[in-house]
Image (cartoon, rainbow, N blue to C red; front, top):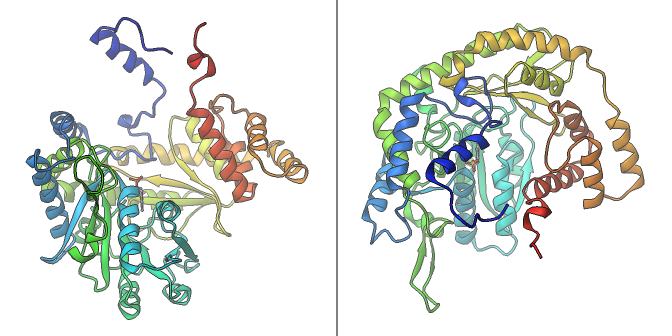
Length: 479
Ligand SMILES: *Cc1c(COP(=O)(O)O)cnc(C)c1O
């Protein structure tokens, strides 16, 4: 594709954009249990309207756009009081949970000044910590969770701490199982060792206080817990704000100071960035402000009630389906089920064929592969239909036969050292061409689940590299 020599009309542009969306996940229909956070039309419109209103404003220089700093500090203030912070607390709005976590790790690293820094975290901590560590030259010491509760094992984390540890991490809740780690015990460990403790409340932290008010019980996780020094909380998940809004919050300014980057030693303007981005749209900040003000405490409480009722309904429904086992007793809107008979990957395919989107998670260190359901007010109303179809899908998946890919993988593994070429060969053998995935994906997942993890990493990197490269003919110059 080339830049057209003559521009299209606005109507043409709009029509073409709309046509591109045909295959996008249809989360508004309430049949996606993946990563769409749906609170309904009104909330969607409030966020979109505020976003659009501020989308062209730049938060780069808050002295020339004072609304940016005002909106951001007010959103941060609302979240701090929501999470019981004291008067010394502060924070920033970032583009997402990953950025919030990168900043928390950077602040801890720069405060500690170790030559070979590491962070100690449960294996269930989000991949964003591994990414942050990778970007920032920090090592991660992954500690197994307590296998009976699937929550952080505080004793094992204590044993993992070294002289070069710069940060402890806990989740409230963790993404893989929706469980809140024992944050009060981690806080005591952090205080005893003089280490900062980051609580990753990205997915659930915003709604957990409402769950608590509705009678749910789980460990305390916010700034009331002594020893907690920073918390990440995504507004673009269960805050129901459009994408591009997360918060990194600190108990005090001292630690946050290490987050801020300034460069005045070049011929240009004084660069002062509190977050990773420099030029950035005020759109997400305004949207966050608008949705928080629009919903208010009562609005969030009501949304949380609908989710909590949905989670209870889903867990008891899953318990009744022969062959499925709910892993852990979820504290939050994430419900995870493993299969005792058919493969979860076939179940997901069968559900896809029936119009449902459900995420699958690969097995990890003896923990079984599983189905991961994210419950929102938007999909909770369809749970009876979901459970009916799921019962059938489990039955159909039981009949599915293993395909030939396992044997092929074994062949490849014994004959070739891993390389991008081998990874591409694997992809084409499983029917992936030009980034297009086949409709049924169970066999691909079975293969990934069976491969050594460095191979899986190679394969998914190769896949993305292909998917996100324009076709050669689109780039070639006409001679
Ligand atoms: C989603 C999530 C993240 C990463 O957030 P992004 O907004 O996707 O960058 C980090 N931690 C947890 C627990 C999450 O659920």
